[in-house]
Image (cartoon, rainbow, N blue to C red):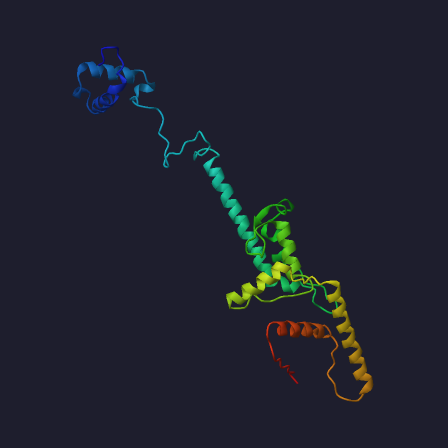
Length: 263
């Protein structure tokens, strides 16, 4: 024992703990003075249980994270953060599924019918199908797979997908096995939302070519009423498109173009 009192000094605590361990195993293994001291300590606890020497706390470590900073397993810290991470990951997965379904099935909702047949409704293109609510529409999600996407709200993602795949152009391309070709198409379609912005001069030029096609069709029918011909009706827009293709091909060095028909 220390001469300064009945309590062990700080520098001898390790020695006292070793004696106490021996005392718990066999009270007769220590001197009578120490046995009397340890017995007095035990008598002061509830039910006479052995006291625990040393600090009453466990040092913080990766196996025993501190609870004071809100990262304890028993609090709302670490477990709560992990739950939020898992929830955000699950929502992001649903957004990715929604984007993919627009690419695979969006053409079925496109208004591509010349007679105005209403497009069908697909539940897998509805955010509610995945459990999203109106409150989620303004929540941001990762949209790196969309050209120029980055971080977009769910509302913005849906608008981009509908503009690209569900307007007047229906695109069915996800069956293409070549990943480079598929990505090439996807990047250019989603980057422009399948809409080419034309200047007024370009629009007037297209209108002129469409008018020329319609007038020439009428001329053939009146000039040769009994002759066999293949009508251009329904494909007038092909003419300004072919003209644009020929011009672009010439700019890129193409010297010869061969047209063929199935008939």
